[in-house]
Every structure is written in C-alpha cells, then in structure tokens.
Image (cartoon, rainbow, N blue to C red; front, side):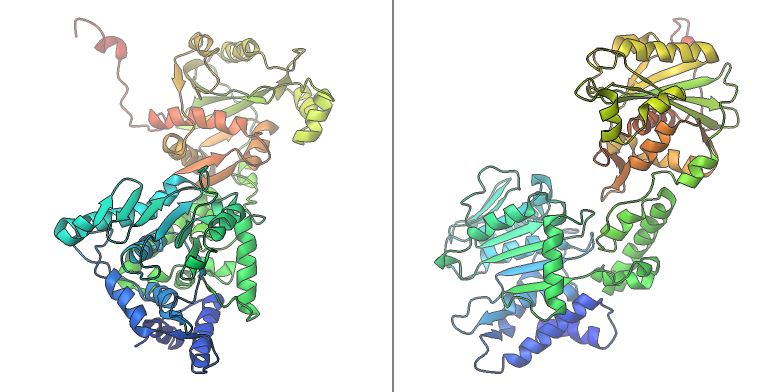
Length: 574
C-alpha cells in the first residue's frame, strides 16, 4: 500500500485530526494520484521507492535509544513517501526539488532531516557518485542538531556493521561515503564560503530565525541549478516565528496561499502543521494540529502534560506568545505589553516604606556610552517581602540636538522624569555618564535609609573601571546576564509580584523597562530578557534581575534558610 495512505486514511476516517493546511496537502496528493493515471501527466507515484526509503530509515538506530531502531510516525512516513515516492515519468528522477515544512518544535524535525540526509548519502542513485549533502541553519549550533543525529546514528551502525564502518569516514563536521565519493557536511548562514557551494541535497533548518534567509535560499538554489542536479532537493523546515516581516514569513505566505488557491508549484511539496485559530491553543485536543507526533498515544502521554505546563507558564509569566509560536506553530508578533502585567505592577507600586536597618541588595546595569545606567536597590522587608526602588542615570545626548533629540529618539521624557526625582541627566560636556556620581548616589541612598548592603550585583561587561568603587559599598558580585544564570530569578520576580511579595517604588523608569523587555524562552525552558525591543531602554529591569539573581541564589526569601556565622567558622579556635 502507498505509505501516504496510512496517514491519509486515518485522517479521512477522523482518527487523526489535522488543520486546514494539511487537509489541502492531502487533497493535493489524492488529486495528483488521480491525474497520474493520465499519460500526459508528467509524474507518477513509485510505491516501491517510497516503501524502500521508509524501511531503510526504520532500520537505523533511534536517537533516544541506540539499542532500538527508529519507529516513524505516520505523518513522517507521509512526508518521506511524498518526497521519495513521486517521480518524473521522463527519467525516473524525483519530482519535488523543493519542500517547505512548518511544524511546532519538539516534533522530530531535526531527526527527520538527519535521516533524509543519511538516505541521500547511502541510498540515492542519481547522481551515482559525488553527491553533496548540506545541512545548514542560521547558526552552526542549530545546523549541528540534525548533523549530530545523523553522525551518531552512523557511528552506532558502524559499530555492528564492518561494511558501513569501512565504507564511511566520520568526522566532527563531515561524513564521507568512500564508495561513491559522496559527502555530508554541516555549515551555517554565517560561513564565508557559501557562495558557489553546490549540493544535491540542502537542508535548511529553523529558517524563521534566520535574518538572511532569502539570500541563503538563493545561494543554495543556485548551487542546484546545473544539468547534473536534476534529482536535487532544497528542503526547508522550521517552526514559525515572531518577525512578521522576515523573509521566511514571506515564503510561508506565498506557499500557504498557493495551497489555498490550488496554484502550488508542481516541483514543491508543502506541508504546514499549525493551529487554525488562537482559541485552539487553550484546548489540549487541538494541539495535535501543530504537533502531529500526538497521533501516538504513548508519546502524547509524555508530551501533552509538558505542553499544558508550557501554556500555564505562559499565562503566569505573560509570555503566551512564546507558546503560540513554538508549541502551536502560529506566526505571532511578540507585542505582549509587559513582562509583569501592567495592572499587577501598578497595584504593587507604593510609597517608599521605612527601610531603617534593613538588609538590601544593589543591582547595577551599566550603560553603553550615552545610554541609561540602571540602579535597583532591593530591600528585604519583614515577612519575606521585597521593596524594589529604581533610579537611572542618563547621558545627555551630547550630539546634535542634545537631550531634546534623545527624548524624541527614545520616546522617553527624561527631563520630566528628572524633575520627578526618578533619574539624573549627566552634565558632562561629552554626554557621558560619570560613574563616580552613580557610586555616590548609591552611598547616599544607603546612608539616608540606614541600610545594610549585602552585595552590589553587576554584569561584568564594561565594569572594570568601577569594580573597586563597588567594593567600597559591599562585596561586588558578578552576575553574567545569561539565561542559565538569570532564568530562575526572572521567573521568581514575576511570580512573587503576582503573589504580592514584591513591591515597587513609583518610578516610571521601571515601568518603561517592564513594557519594553521581551521575554524569550529556549527549548530547555530557560527564560531571558531580549534587548532587541525598543532599543536598550530596559536597564532598570536588568539591574533588578541582577539583584534578584543574588537573592534567589542565596535563598534570601526562604524563611527556613540556614545562616552561617562566617566569623565563627573562620576563627582558628574552631
């Protein structure tokens, strides 16, 4: 039986639910199968070829457990049978020279690419020798995801098969088939040698995050236009993204519209698994529309709870856009109003309480040239609560237009905020913030409020000239602004604010930073704040996260924490 039919039949019977776009893809296949009976139609479906590829791949080791072979899902068999089953009646070469696949993350796309690459390396017959297989993405790290799966699979096969072991030369970034002089290699969009690169198979992963996608597509396509490339394939696979103006989004729009209009290019296979509406994101049963692996009940029992938790985290952290894009495969401009919900933040903004005698942690985010230096002084209130007081120093834009032009460019009324006591605009003739003034402000704040500073927390970037002065206040603690170090603190600040455990001064600088910061989440669930939105006017958020990272790491909000007497333990008598 045509391997496509197993998936198609289960869809048609209602056993597997699919979205509108996949229904169009399936209907296209059925229409093409009917047309192929006509002698004038240029393509035919070779069931034997499709079955051969699927059986070959299912002999390869699973990336999750090398002691077991891979078990393809029905939708993966459908993709493979379409790519390798459809042939040209004129010469038997493959029909599709391009494919565009869009699917939610964690759907096995890197694995699928890896096994397609292995198939091309070892099984393809056209051309018989010298096949070039390219795995590429926006970064080398992402491109390596598929390459490393392929590499590990072939290493495992070689460990039990002398024929494969002797046939292949496997290196960190290349795999060579000595029998056919064919090679698989990994590259990225930033590599300098891409122009003139020829390939029989080019696999482009995560195009939605690639800034120069159109250029990369053109380079790879031009390398497949020779007479010897009649069996070539340029395959694009990605989850959707946040940039609605990106090249990849334009490709998506063209391809999906062509499916709706029944004008899809004859040489292009198009399959888009996505939700049909945003309302479906709240219904577990609808998530299969973007996550076709959920057709497998055993896999669904593992994945669905994780998707539900991601959705819940998105609701709590006000980052649902991440869930819509990554888990629902919906294009969504990331326009969430704020990191902390505006209404919740306003509710937790209070007049400064009596801080006399309290411990505090200072967070400092230094400016780049004439930007904002953010200060956050986080005081530990009784009953395991925090009070966050923000302040800023601003360069006066000592260029043409001065502070007036800077206010227009940044869309922030700096002079009004200075009059309200929320920031200081430097008087330096070059517009540069004077760090001595920053240090003196912190010292005065501590003295005026009789605080006990536990640490000055800062990002070491651009901080060497001020580190010694920080030590005059309290121990200086480096906080590298990366998701692996800050993620828990970022989540804690949001959650504790919603719980009423964090209160803020009425400083508009923090509110502005809160609205501007964009929270991003990686595949491991670590979150971080992007500095790419509305310039870099989020310094007070990062200053607060610096302090919160120390508070989180030291468990200062835990009433049951154990406090050691350092003086006692450092005493020689001990």
